[in-house]
Amino acid sequence: MKAYVSIDIEGLPGISSATMLIPGNTQYSRGSKIMTLIAKKTAETLLNNGFNKVVVADSHGYMTNIDYLEMPKNTVLIQGFPRPVSMLTGLDESYDAILFIGYHTGAGTLHGYLDHTMSGRTFAEIKINGFRASEYLINALVAGEKNVPLILVAGDQLLEEEVKKHTPWTVFVPFKRGITRYSAMYDSFEDILEKLVNGISKAVEKLKKGEAMPLRIHKPYTVEIRLREELIGDVLETWNKLSRKDAYTFTFEASTAEELLETIELIAFIAYGVYSLKNALK
Image (cartoon, rainbow, N blue to C red):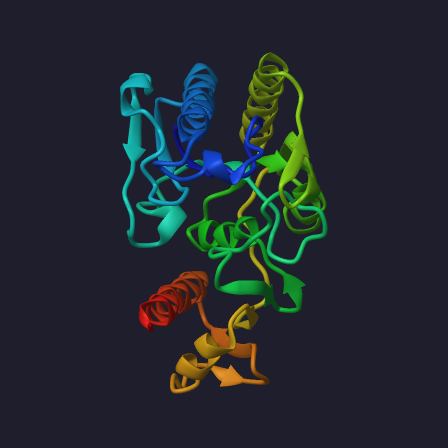
């Protein structure tokens, strides 16, 4: 069997400061170490539960956070940014299962630790078919269209309700609980690893029993985005794929989840350009 693991950082235990998130920041080495150890334990546990290959997608920021030298045998590591399909690069129908590790709440979630969806600087909120969307939901839809069942999500406990709503068969492992946008609580690392191992074992057992399935919802997807910066909207207004409702709000339709994700990613890249332009004006 072959498993795909998409791992982010904001939903990991021990991460409670923006100084842990970006290379060059004062506590980044701690964040990188935590992410590496969690990725290693995830891969080892899957390999010990019947999988013969595990692909780990480093999926935060510049996507080069995991120490390659720590990855176990029979593990493939995907790193680097930008890349196609973002946090799910290389995922296809050949995979038996997918796991989301270190995932966080979506933009607009009250008290979610560093809540955001795809780009915190760009989006205040994203809705899909009327539901507030996190990266969990977007990526679960992409995996679902490739017929890959989501068997486990681990991260901020405030994400659990969304997971239960859309993929009730998915095992949820709480890594932390957001208190405010910049604070969280979490158990000891040893306790967290024990929860992770037990959660993966339970998820694999459910998969083997045929209790896990791909996520599918009504298509085409109707998407609404709320921006954080009006100038981004002024630039996006010329794109005929999008319909502008007010200074900050746009809607569009997507026939596939990959199209949905690609559109959101392109909007984020355009937003980065707008911010760069603003910063260049003297």
